[in-house]
Image (cartoon, rainbow, N blue to C red; front, side, top):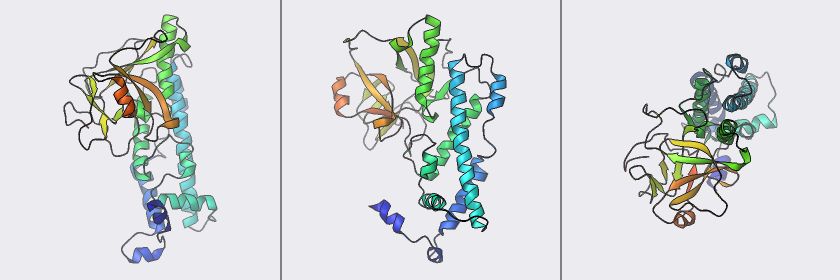
Length: 317
């Protein structure tokens, strides 16, 4: 209802006379932010340069993930820059405004991600301003990774990948090749550490031992670092940021065998859950796993307003 009221609000110059910003003012402000703060046009990823640094192009599963992510990112950036350039031309009177351009301008004015961008982007429930900042963070991670495409960064923000499933599959592929094991008989095993993503004491991993990932927010419960288990949420804390998680491949357990004291926690890309399912993590618990099933406890990757900060203790967010 409120979204409809917002869409019906005046967007013309009369609003500016009351101290507000016109539709064109807001759009131009957003375009300046894209150009000056985010600098998308200067930060596009040079895939040819990345390929020139590759030692075993096509043989390293993690390298393939990097190339795929860079291609997704460049496609999205190109669409953003192209559509904003068209709007700029229309403001100058050099281009006729089309229905698609009008829809895009309305979305920017209402702080919503335009449909044409969302179609090429990652699943997200963020407002446009927060979405743009999250896009910049994702781009920063790829720019850091591409400096040495043959080596996976010490800690990967899994919540900043377009396709996190492909990274988890790469973990299984490396294990499969090293141990001559069938890929379809492997699953991702999780081990939650007590360290943050900036902790320099994380032990190095050898090939086939998995990868450190970060960016898990537990919804409906709290991760207690001291005990290393799922606990009840703190008052007024819907989400709990989890520490670094070691994701590694392991042979699937025997059918019908359940591990006691472990909650099989589903992980999703957004709060909408559903089709954004990524994988199932294993979280230790003293409580019966059924308790967390009834509570709908899940890991969510992309949450607006929750900082990527991990602190030990009851004040962790």
